Length: 72
Image (cartoon, rainbow, N blue to C red; front, side):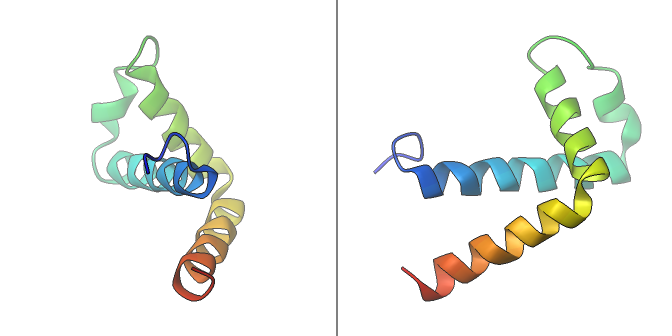
């Protein structure tokens, strides 16, 4: 089944996108900072969410990993 139709897979993809964007911005900030608007601005916004809400994102990642490993 596609990640669009499965809610847990959609949440996993969103969490991975947020974590990846935050990691890329930590390594190369100029890569994401030049695209703050438009379609590519989504990646900048995900990086900001990952930076500002990092304890909550980390908690969600641990919960999602637990549910994928032990509840499926």
